[in-house]
Amino acid sequence: MLRQKIVDTHVHLSPKVSPKAAVAAAAIESELAVAGVSRAIVLHLISQPWSAEDFAAAIANHPRLRGFVNVDPHAADVDLQLRQAVEKLGFIGLKLHPRLQKFELSDPASTHLVALAGEMGIPVLIDAFPDGDWLMMGFDPLRFAKLAIECPRTQIIIGHFGGHHCIDFMMLAKRIPNMWFDLSYSLLYYEGSAIIDNLLYSCRSLNFRRVFFGSDYPDRSIQQALQMSMEVFTMHELKPPQLDALLWRNAAEFFGWTDI
Ligand SMILES: [Zn+2]
Image (cartoon, rainbow, N blue to C red; front, side):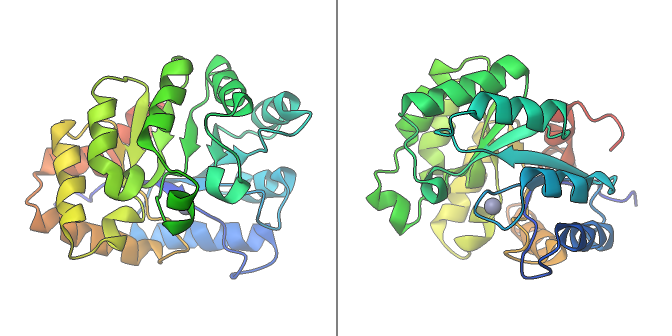
């Protein structure tokens, strides 16, 4: 049997592993090797103790790792920060976390930044896990949709598939071509509930396109997240081409990686 190819589009450096970014990055590289994952997107967060420069230097030595940079949409030099992160530091995407970063998606500064990413030809991954805090902040799939419509040149990845709002997001994605999804965290968080059925229904309804696998390491070890996700896929009787699509092919095509 051929080895199952895997791309993990959602991991973070763990400050619990080490205060040194280089050590935390090496830990991810070895986790990926153990789990048989060919490539991973590592998401920088300004709430973590590393600058974009330290982060970029830490992942640069590892062939499996690529980075998305996190910037503050309200920073005075936000355009410069994003341009330098991509052109000088080698980041291949922008990560936004409106809940942790405390900004509104409807804010003109958000639209400006997301549009700029599109002009630069890089995708934007936006956290979309509707926990209690974000629900109280007014989490609404329509805000993501409006942003995608306002920034038609930007490829927007909805992190965690919008959690229990996955059906809404899937329906919106049928009308809005520049929306993609990752399954990280949600596929395991709602274990044993009908939301898992809804997530798989949403994947099926999108013909298993525009959806990526993610582990959200260090929430769980990459190996464990992968095993648990495979159990869900097996339970839902996914066929090999559907598994390939979710586990690596969609991501490889999206990022133009021909070496997976
Ligand atoms: Zn995450």
